[in-house]
Amino acid sequence: MSLSGRVALITGASQGIGRACALKLAATGATLALAARNQEKLGELMKEITAAGGKADVFPLDVADEEQVKSAAKTIIGEFGKIDILVNNAGITRDQLVIRMKRADWDAVLQTNLTSAYLCIQQIIGSMLKQRWGRIVNITSVFGQMGQAGQANYAASKAGLIGLTMAIAREVGSRNITCNAVAPGFIETAMTAGLGDEFKQNAVKQIPLGRVGSPEDVASAVAFLASDEASYITGHVLNVNGGMLMG
Image: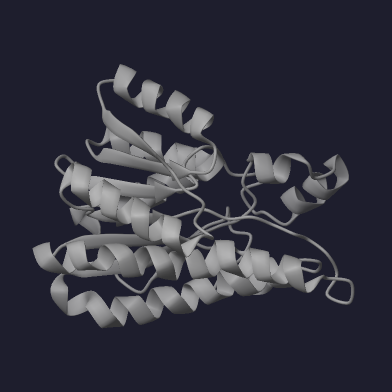
């Protein structure tokens, strides 16, 4: 599975799933445009990729800011000539029961997790249409499929990504551009690190494989969907959840 000659933009690349995706795609030959708010972590990741013989550059970006998205996309295409692969991974949580959830926390999560994906797709789709090849992978969540108490904003944003994925797949499929989603289950990342041990133990009991997933588990699925091997798959949600949700 080779991505040699391909340019991949990953949002939220500084840590967790985004970081694992960057390392995986770089290992399969892609040139990486690393985007996130934390420039220091992006720089460390770029050094790791280049030290292993890969190619990468850093593009500080707050995906919730439309002007920053437009500027970053223009800069990346200017530097690399194109964007072949887009991984919409950036995401945040602002958990609270809906009766107490502040409008600002609802808006922040929807803007960062869902609206940003629309903005990024809109800015890079022209490059893909021009060359009649593209791979868009949106990172959704098992909670966008089954809901989660205390995460109405997060679940809504991730469910919205699934609908967005299918709509885009229908819009651009005739141009040899696929759009798919990966739905992780319980993955060991900085986002889940703060959860209590009791919560984690109860979560594992709901997983038939009996373990939490790793960012690398998700990255492998993303790399597959970004490759030519997945050329006849579009509008699909690939579950990476250890069997937590089936059907």
